[in-house]
Amino acid sequence: MEIKVLGTGCRKCALLEETTRTAVDELGLDATVEKVTELVDIMAYGIMATPGLVVDGEVRLSGRVPKLDEMKSLLARWSA
Image (tube, rainbow, N blue to C red; front, side):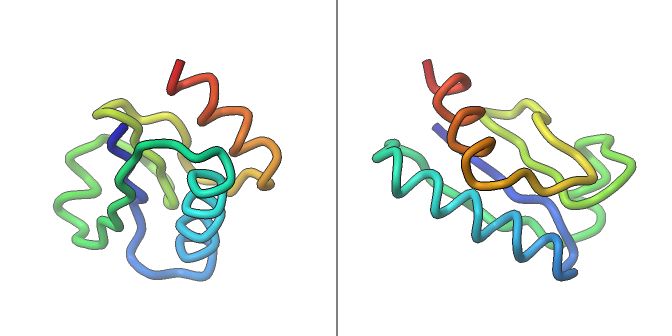
């Protein structure tokens, strides 16, 4: 699983990255988590609000940070 956290460095972007990495670790997923900070790269995904979460090339979240339990549930579903 390839996960990209899209954000220019705001507090919510950092929180999404932290929540995502914690969920991946706790679920024991075979995943890579990459932080994408370049505005041009973020715009290529067509999101209108950061932070954004891309899983295996598909935008899954935009403009919000889910709580850890929700993130774990989402990642478990998307990895199935």
